[in-house]
Image (cartoon, rainbow, N blue to C red; front, side):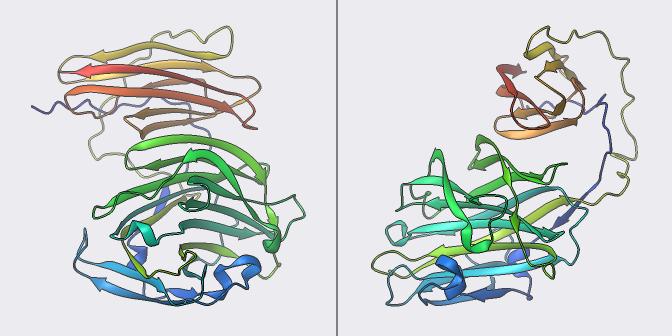
Length: 351
């Protein structure tokens, strides 16, 4: 039996924004590509590469795209990119979401996943690479300093292991990032196949030409020392970002918001979970948080999936949809600079 917990939110949201999602990017015919530009200093060796759109199998939607890289030149890469919007100066928050499938783990040097926003002569670059044969860890794209250009970017290890992902199955990757209110690049989290990792690293944006603008996303395959041929199939590739518009109604028949009851904020840095649970047809989560400085985000994750985000508030009162069984809940709160973060993990059983 599946029991649903009705969603009701009592969140002090400041500057709430709706979301815009660019879906099935892999099928977009405006796809661009290159090989040399994917290498060091955008001048690497050239691979043989191609992309085939509209693939029915393997596919989740019947509209996957097959990406191929190979050739004879060692360590040659291939990059495919899309421009999503022409002006991203008002956009701050981004979620990258992709499913990928491949069959030959021994051929993969690494895979790269990226979203970049250009505004005000800056490049807010959010890049992850699964460096299978170069340390076997997840790395993030980082500038040497605030005066760095594209050529000065380097890969910085997160310490999160990334051996070759499982083959012959669909892997699900998401990451959440943002451009902060002070125009810094903030890596928030990474989730692969339901395993979520907090990154919480903030760094400067890099310099970009004043003529560069908009929001782009790309996917890259890296060749190994033998330049072994391999393909990766991609499906349900999306990027979600804020739009700055007023949020639409959550539901045509919303559940009335309950009258909140007291939930004391901790006296020192930490999270106070006042209640979790309810009846067989409804349940709520009530919590408060304290961090050093000004609180920026207060989040609730269930089984590695983010369910609630409260901005600029220390109080959360909500309910979330969960199936019957035992679930892992993770509460996370951090301040505006990312220098103070508190977490609390607990389990809840739904019957």
